[in-house]
Length: 191
Image (cartoon, rainbow, N blue to C red):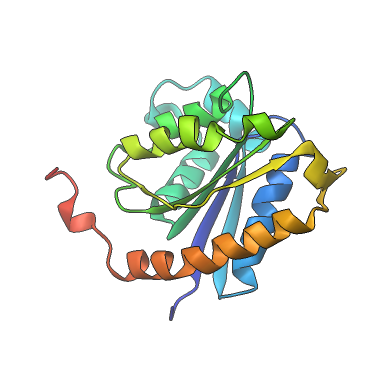
């Protein structure tokens, strides 16, 4: 890729520090080790209050609008949420309520989640993947789930999880590169 890969990582965590944010940062770092990137991390702990009172996009403050534009213009989105009451957090969904309906068509999205135990791993397939299917985004086949036991505090410590991140990055790069070179924007609105 001639220009840096524009990555926007989104942490749906409502806490700081956050295992979800640590996972997103590790995924971004995985891409940085393989290719030239221009990465941005969107943390709901920082912009959540700006979203909470808005019902329409034009009501959002400039900081939140800037983050939405970054999401919509990214070459790759890393979307992650902790499992909260069997789903992603409400503010995570509210953020995507402001994203343009056709802004993510064909855009690669890497899905990730964190939770208290392994039984929560299905959030990727049952909650996150359908959300991005609505946007007609290109959800990557492999997602990354991390449970509390994969961390030492807020640092990833599990070698198998690091190997999974490496595998996801390796498999994602050709797809992301092709999507960046051949955007489907000319089809938007005709579906």
